[in-house]
Length: 372
Image (cartoon, rainbow, N blue to C red; front, side, top):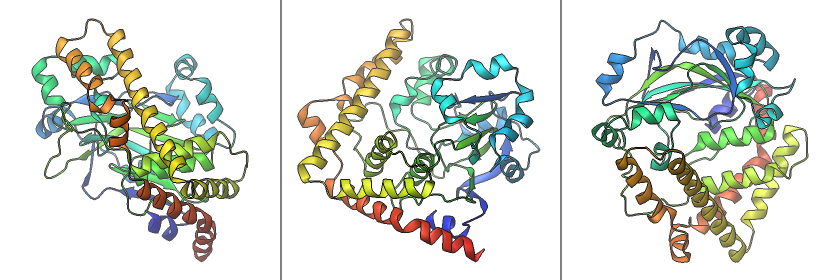
């Protein structure tokens, strides 16, 4: 991705996953309308690839043209062209103060994404499947047989039901994504997973009013061989990883950075990364422990709220949630936290490398843009 960002500096371009098919399908919840929100994606569950192909008809859309139609548009143009599809009450109902803070006359669409059918392509952990919205949850738990199948096989739809301006959301390269690289965008990690998440989060750090557009139609994403979800009963705890530690550092830096220009904000983030890379062993370990405990606490709270809000949910779902809460992934004991920590040397190396990349990136990007 870093090569693409430099090779296409000053231009718009699309990123396509190597196992996606440009076969546009109607999403199961797709409807006319337009929304502005930071709400998480909806989900719809299927039993097989054939089930997906049977129930999601093909659409006569040009996916590339549809991405380029919205990519790079300023917010006023988006609103002028799309808001007629929704009345004012519907448009404002889901807005939060956080959403409104992201909207500005300078807001523009930096990324575009469409929905995915098949394997969602993300490192989704099982707890997310246990805390769905009510409509999605009802389908997910319609019977124990279906529920067991859905928690094992990765045959789902993930996306938004309408055209949406996303005030915040994870960037994913699961299928097709549009990238407006006409203004300075940051580098991402060179070799580790979740390069898309890092690119999206750091871009929103550089441009606090940057937006994404979700397109409601879907592209097929089937893996061969097929992958399955990690079992809920897995005895091993999910390991903390260096990129998610870096993402936490980016999120923390956001509240302390007061610079306006993207180049200055990038320089600030570079200093923060290098500062952490040179922290003492004790200070870095304390941060890793704090980050892991905070992550597990937030997951635990979300699941406990789901239990309280759904007292009549099926017993098989409640048993799984309670087992997950009492399992190694939610354990906050000293020994469990120590066992789940990321490799401190890898975290330090990642922060050092990314900090240096941020320092030199603006000059590299501008030199490449001048060549075009």
